Amino acid sequence: MRKLYLWLVAGVLLLAIGLYVYYASTRNIEGYIDPSDTELVTLGRQVYSMQCASCHGVNLEGEPNWRQRKQNGRLPAPPHDVSGHTWHHPDQVLFDIVKNGLVPGVTAPAGYESDMPAYADILTDKEIRASLAYIKSSWPDKARSVQTQLTQEYQKVQ
Image (cartoon, rainbow, N blue to C red; front, side, top):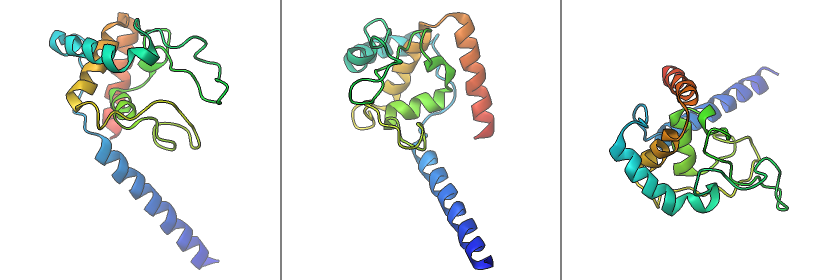
């Protein structure tokens, strides 16, 4: 019984270390993504228009009925304006989702399937940050304030 317990603890430890190493290696983000940086927002508007708008909407409105599953069981692309949930996530998580897609067990629930592609081989880190700055620049002050606080709290525990 003791051997089984030790193997279980070792397995959980290895899994935790593996997830940490994976997450740390994909976290190529430094600090807060500033939506008041006009240069970054301008680049972000271009990136968003070319890479994101076809799914998430020209006006950040998302696909229609974004909370209802499609026939394939996947959820439509959510809005990135204040009516969606993007502002409920810290910058590091948003960056990771854009760069690596929705990874089950990391940035999405286990078993989750999504049409969200990974942009690691398409966009530079700066372009990813810029697209997020553009999205954030559209939010009202209250949503920005909440999201900034989430980002700061997330950074403290990392």
